[in-house]
Amino acid sequence: MASLDFSGKRVLVAGGTSGINLGVAEGFAKASAAVFVFSRDAAKVGAAVERLSAHGGRAGGGAADVRDMGAVEGVVARAAAEMGGLDVVISGAAGNFLALVNGMSSNAFRTVMEIDLLGTFHVMRAVFPHLTKPGASVVNITAPQSWRAMSGQGHVCAAKAGVDQLTRTLALEWGHHGVRINSVSPGPIADSGGVARLYSDEAALERRRASIPLERLGSNEDIANMCLFLASDMAGYVTGALIPVDGGAGLTMEAMRLDPRIGARGGNA
Ligand code: HXC
Image (cartoon, rainbow, N blue to C red; front, top):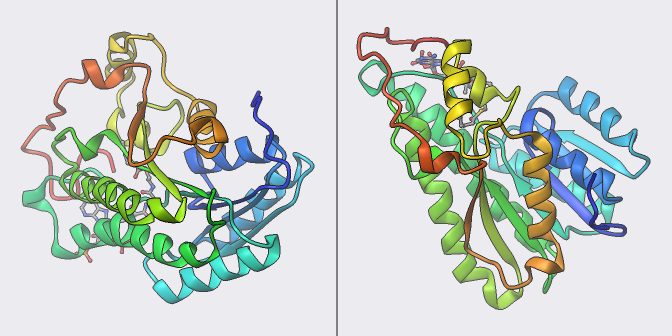
């Protein structure tokens, strides 16, 4: 249960219609914020808005593909108009599949770069004019792939490293506007798309769980709580940081090495 109060705050979550990002949106809804989510799938947007509304606050949503700058600008402008501005932005739209670089087409690599990295750039460009200045807080959802090499994840490693450097650059460029921006890197989160892709085999997942210093997988609420903290005044001197929320998993992570003989389309995507 969130203990921070976001009454009167306006929160936008890009990619917030499923998985970890929806969990973060729910964290803000439970903390009494007005929340607006978007993703490319209109059906998921409708379901997410219904779920967020159940927490009693104001919830809205729209459909836009983060790869399309015009569409992102449109949906962000709508969110800002409906809520009266933006105090908090969480940007987490991402795409992933397992494939070795040698087996990946140019379009496959480009697709993930465009969703994860170009998409983050689009969201950052679109939200800035609408942010509360000073005082706004932006969080990019990144991944351990940004600093840890993993075979089968070359596209994601490259894209997420780019996202983190964009976060740091914007901390430099936005600091004097009084806008803070940080990256949150979720570790293995139970029931997430990332864990489902990386650990298709129960035994491998159990070995991984046992190796985590806190001896459990994370939850969406763990990630939401860090985002709530970063968006609050309690984090008023935190910007440009990359914060793992992983139970210490990054300290014990073995370099992931897929069987190099896997096919062009990966092992379990
Ligand atoms: C090799 C693949 C592939 C695979 C797709 N491609 N899957 N190549 N192995 N398993 C190739 C396609 O063949 C195509 O290239 C290109 O990628 C684009 O694929 P499309 O299906 O046309 O693209 P699109 O419909 O936009 O789909 C995007 C997607 C898809 C990312 C590729 O997987 C998707 O929508 N996934 C759902 C969202 C998602 O992945 N969420 C996970 C978030 S978890 P060609 O050359 O054939 O045209 C996450 C956390 C990161 O990201 C950390 C994890 C631990």
